[in-house]
Length: 403
Image (cartoon, rainbow, N blue to C red; front, side):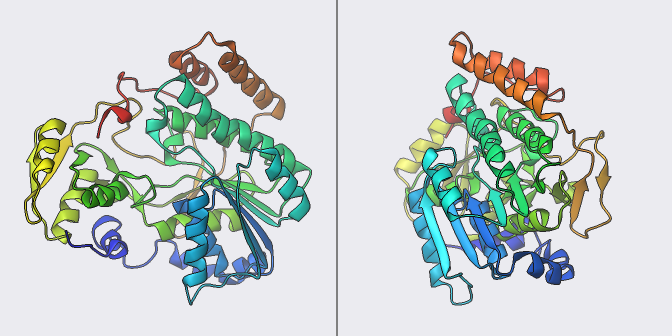
């Protein structure tokens, strides 16, 4: 298998953009971005992941004075440090530290209070996979991370206000059909409740091509292990490059008004089918494929796979819980500004519940989860009570039951 140039493949076959979608908005706001970032202290939570690390690379171009990065992935932090230190064109402030810890743990609070204040804070620590809604335990872990810990951190920030706070969302929060999207929608409502006390923004954006843990990134690992490829044939998504994912978060964080939700301005015809990307991926690798009729057939063909044999690929119609066949960034109830930025739309009228209402919702969820007398459907039902546009798709099948 020829190792292809992944960034070039993304530009050529997925986003089909020769330069970043957000380049013009960055150029148009270059001086303002520099004023807001240069010499400032920055804290990035979840900074070892694809989006968090891309945000760090975007913000380092404007030379902050201090950068602290927190993530539970110790190996990811190590690789991030190697990337930054090994890049001759990368500015790294003298005061740069990484901490392998959970932002919900007491040791994080000790670090935050002792090493602050931080002018810019961005939180990318999130459960991001639809596959993370297998049962009540996985859902509880997801809501704990995406909602409960996020609120506890906001309570801390209210007493130690940064100049800018950003918390990442997802396109799947618009008319959510899965618990991940619903948890992010609830997270948006939590942060909006604090938007009068903090300068706070968020962003929904497309799939990040070849991001850590993504279907496309998994192709590379499958190839190294001579394992078959499995891909939905009927799912299409918007895509941004890893670089673009960090840029939209930086722009939303630094330029947005408190309570605004940003999203990339992408036309419906820019969505791509995973099947088409998969076929292009193998063409770019100069490797033919053989389409299999089942997972078992694909696995059997992989057992006797030789170097130049057609690669076994199984295309299937989606039948798992929480899968939406298309993407959307806003609903017909949203007031959207598509004029201020050339590449970004902004939702201006996000619902802002009183903090007392948010406290009530969270207490009800915690009480249900602590009761021991509940299942996945009970949690979904409670989320639907508080998120009116949450229309959960339940098929009884999880992504973890597939290759």
